[in-house]
Each structure stands twice: as C-alpha cells, then as structure tokens.
Length: 506
Ligand code: AMP
Ligand code: MG
Image (cartoon, rainbow, N blue to C red):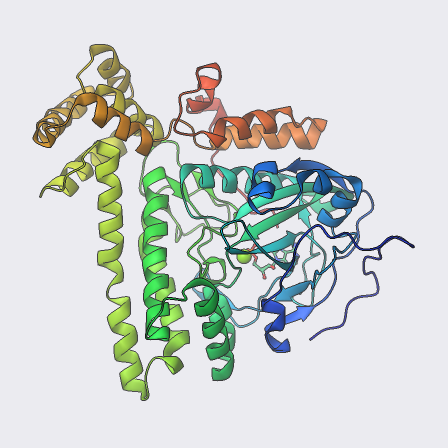
C-alpha cells in the first residue's frame, strides 16, 4: 500500500463530506497488495461539461446534487464524497503481444462502488485524477478530446446494445496538459461492472502469488459469476462466453477497439478503455485506425482471434486453480479455451442472421452473409448504411433498392446476391413488414462516425462550444430510430472528411 500524496483533496473547512454516493467498497477490502490507496490530485478550476442524468438516475444517484458545485468538485477529484475509499488498482498485461509485468491504474482512481436499482454493483472511477504509484512516466491526467471520445462512444455502444463501461460525467479541470501541444485537462467518471481485467489475474500469476489469483477469482465469482458451480472452471467458461459474445457484437456494428491488450480486456465482458477506437465507415476486414497499431494487430478482422489469444493468457493465469496437477490443469484450461471458436462463430452467425432478417437457421446462411461482405469489401461500401438500407428492401421496393444499389460502384454483384437473399427470405414465410422491423432493430442508422466525433471535439476544444456534443449524444441515444431532423448524421464522411487515423491521446 502507498501513502496518499501531500496534495490530497481537503473538504472545505466546516463542511462535512457530501453523501452523494451510497458507497460499499468491496475491492478496498481485498489485501493491500491489490492496489495503492491514495486520493485524487486536486485541479484548479473544475467545470462540468456533461452529466449523464439518465445513468445517474439508474444508479440511484441525485443528478442535481452531482451538477451542483460541490458535486462537480467531487467529479473533478477536488473533494471526496462520504464513504469513498479511493485506490489505484494493480494489474499487468500483454501490450501488442509483449509482456509488461507492472501496469496498474496510472491515471485513474476507483472512488468506490454503488449498487443500482436492480441490485447490480458498479465501480465509480475517476479517469484523469492524477499521478499514482503506477504512473511511471505519465502525468496521471486526461485531456478533453479523449475524454469526450470515450464519453460519446461508450454511451453510443450502450444504446446500440453492446456490453460496455459507461460514462457518468465529463469535467474540465482548468489545467493545460502537455500532449501534442497544450490541451485542456479533463476527468471522466467511468462506471463499470468491475475494473478487473485479464491483466489483473496476470499480475498475481506472474508473481507466483497463487493466493492472490485465488482471492481475485473468488472476488470475481462472488461479484460477477455467483452461479459458478465448479467455480474456477466455470469462471473461465463464463469469461470466454461473454468475451466471444462481446467481440461478435463489435464485429456486427463495425466497432474497432484499437488496443486489445490484455489489460484492456474486462473480466466482466464489457468493452473497456476507449482509446484510439473507431467505427468503420467503408467495410474492409483489414481496417485499422489506431496510430500506434502500425502492424495492424488489432485490425477489425483480427479482433475475434486476438480475443482468443487474450483468453489463453487468462487461462494460463488461472492454471494454479484449475487442477491438482499441472497436466490436469492444462487439460481443463485447454478444454475451456477450445470452446471459444464455436462460441464466437455462433454469436457472429446469429447476429448476421438478424442483420439479414433471418429468424430461422438454415444451412448456407453463413455463406450468404459472407458473400455480401465479400462484395461490400470489394466495392468499399459503407458498412452501416448498406445494412440499414437493405432493411428497406425486403418487399423489393424499387426506390429502396435504388438506394442500396447506389452504394455499390458496380451494382451487378449486389443484384446477383440480392436474388439469393430474396430466395432465402421467402423460406422464412414471414410478412415483409415483420422482417423489415427486425432488420431495423438489428442494423443501426446512427453510429458515432469518426468525422462527427472529431468535429465535436474540435468545437469543444477550440471554442468551448458543447452544442455539437449535445446534438451528437441525442442522435446516438436512439441509434435504431430514423430521426428525420438529424438524418444527416447517418451519412458517411465526404472524401475530405474521412478520418484516417485515431490517437489514444494518453
Ligand atoms: P492504456 O493504453 O490507456 O490502456 O494505458 C496503459 C497504461 O498506461 C495503464 O497502466 C495506464 O494507467 C497508463 N497510462 C496511460 N496514460 C497515462 C498518463 N497520462 N499518466 C500515467 N499513466 C498513464
Ligand atoms: Mg488501459
């Protein structure tokens, strides 16, 4: 455990700590070697940029109290709410395949945990709260651009139905942070089912700390997988299942995480650590946006097998708990890991069927979907728009067909595919309207397109103009509804608007 630094937040003289969060801090009750206990580092001038009132209410928190000056002080790390027990979690991880024995929260602090209306426990974390013993060379801070990216994209993912950490608030700090030049500092309040990562298990396993691995596994089972019967094998199975489902849901909406290091893979199966992530505009499996991924390790099409690789790292870390002998443990781990490809394929195929309006399962469905994807890749069509417009074509309406055909430079290949699709739809024996409704619920009209996200960040950073942020968040809150007044947000970028690269901005 590490002592708090000199610059700890002090609640103003005479004022009692604010009881904003009904904290119950289970992680803080684990042994000291799991974390470093310390307070956030205060900032000069906190200002609320965005509060997620809907999420606050779901967590039984009072939005008015959070938005009040004393609430904003808390969201910036200048004041500790009653019951907070702030700590930086220890973890390790494989970064781009290379082993890093010591990582940990270098600029984030877990304030504490709250229990929502459904009885689900959530971490409340301040990201950008200052240096920690795990910071090494970093400044412990976050800047406004990446904080807004994470806010926008995580909330869009939630509305799209993808498991994800959430964003409760974004504040600016009044500090200028040195990155590529000076940029406004910011703090994001992140909400997660848990911040335990594959890398958290690796941290203890790599130190030969079998008790640590077991304590962590027991903690995770108790919190996230209480139904586990043979608990450690079941834990591994459950994480494999959730991760397979998660990555399938990424593939189905064209989301590219960008940094699938094992320290960025949640044990709860949530999307976590939004850095240089991006949604694909034109479809191609090789698509990479991240400036730090020169080799394309984390390209769109690689995500399913990278998740598999990461799960092998988790299985290795759990080996001491999986059998009485090493051989038995390896056999158990291997049997679990070998279920991943089929679990992924099944989630992916089920999702592709939904995207194509197929409620039944027939042989050849995967081939049918793959043929469309092949044509889309060859002709660089927009991933989101192609599927959305396809949903209007179920009854072969000529205007709708023209709209989807216009996305293909050479529509003949699409036409040939569409004939097969129609034959397959006919086998469903369902009304066109029902199929169309299903397709609209599976194929979003709105995704956080990179050029829109960049425009929001530019307006916020350069002009302190947060109206574009509000409008984008409004659009993305209902991604499956046509919103005629805001229909332009569904459009792909014009050639001069295309974003080629994204940055993690840490
Ligand atoms: P990430 O690439 O964001 O997953 O971060 C990898 C590691 O670097 C984690 O241990 C982070 O806590 C740490 N880190 C990232 N940015 C900073 C920063 N500005 N200051 C200190 N540590 C950082
Ligand atoms: Mg990370």
